[in-house]
Image 1 (cartoon, rainbow, N blue to C red):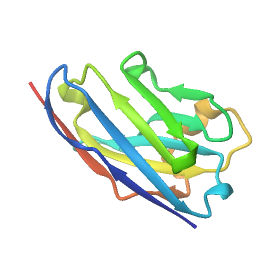
Image 2 (cartoon, one colour):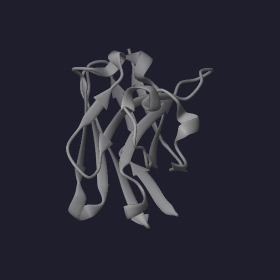
Image 3 (cartoon, one colour):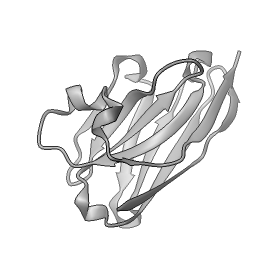
Image 4 (cartoon, rainbow, N blue to C red):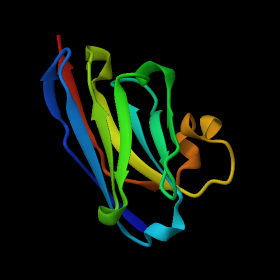
Length: 128
């Protein structure tokens, strides 16, 4: 099992920036991808970005491309989500997830049911 702990959420105004962190501990070698998901009020959980932890490949959903950047510090077993140009519609609980996949990431990132490991989430609120 892997323990995932998110941090860095908060409240910002439109156009602001936040950086989320997800620290992994435990049997981290059991996974090869980590991802960020979010759940907006009244909506289903949706994928945001993913990163191949054994390389540098990254994946983004269209709504955040050009604004969000996922990165990792392997020495710290930590994945980050740099969020720039935040909009009110980015307001959500943001979750870190981990899993092992041997298939193209694009169909996987959009399906939260495929990811076995989850953190507790960190709230991001963007005001207009």
